[in-house]
Image 1 (cartoon, protein in one colour):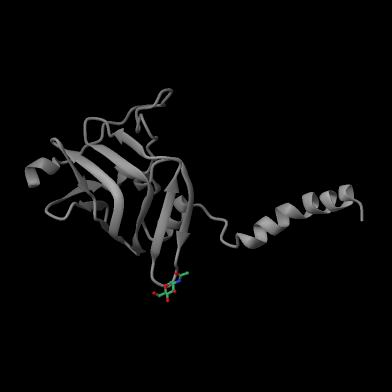
Image 2: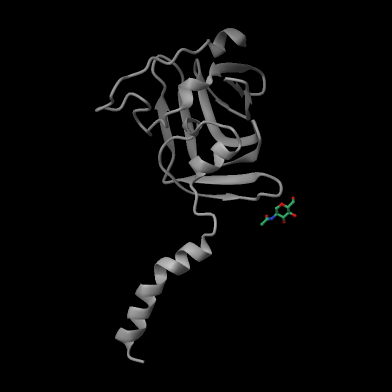
Length: 164
Ligand SMILES: *[C@@H]1O[C@H](CO)[C@@H](O)[C@H](O)[C@H]1NC(C)=O
């Protein structure tokens, strides 16, 4: 077989081999929704993830670290790799996500869903926010206030500071 023929076969087959190798071709945003979380707990730009379905351990990857502020609220930072353990309504042992409270960066160690609220825990304190703040994925840099945005929603959040 000539090299051209080999390349032609490879090019023809590659979409199929890719689909076969990646038997779960769903995105990280789809996966977190399988566990009853809104996709907006992950910013845009996840480049890949690993999930062990038997114990829920996962890693999600970004192309570099990502930080943004939620309108009238907290500054959040995602490292280029975040890890944790996911189960229905509970994201535990989280690493790589932090929130700025006053002048301190605190790691968010757990996120759990209780009805229509999401509770974020930094270990010493936690705060809950209505789930409808998380239907849209924030973008690195500008969060939910990127232009052209159809509308900038004011995020209504109770103060984490007051709960410490
Ligand atoms: C997935 O988790 C199970 C149970 O903890 C473990 O035995 C297995 O080695 C893990 N698989 C991978 C690929 O890490």
